[in-house]
Length: 105
Image 1 (tube, rainbow, N blue to C red):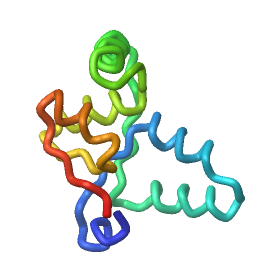
Image 2 (cartoon, rainbow, N blue to C red; image 1 turned 90 degrees about the vertical axis):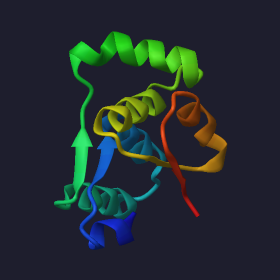
Image 3 (cartoon, rainbow, N blue to C red; image 1 turned 180 degrees about the vertical axis):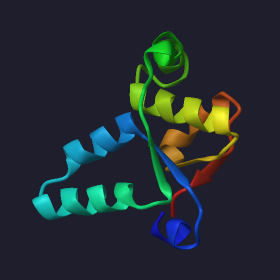
Image 4 (cartoon, rainbow, N blue to C red; image 1 turned 135 degrees about the vertical axis):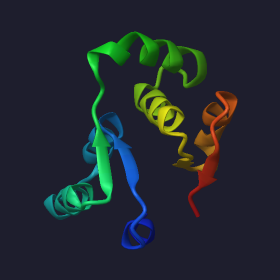
């Protein structure tokens, strides 16, 4: 992701994904690095809107075993016609809804 942003590519980060990432960090330095990355000009943090709640809930139930963060990422990617960058073990739900998936190394 750092290479993409250095080359000027925009990265959409759902607020739900950022929150989950923050919960998994163990040090203040890691949290500061996440904050720095998300504050760069090429990262777009996209919040959940109240208007999206029902659609996100249904998408999470139907394709992501209730995972709201994954559904949020899928909805953003679908609306922007962008691929989802994820791991192989999480790619199936995104492919199931017809999204292009780019795998993390």
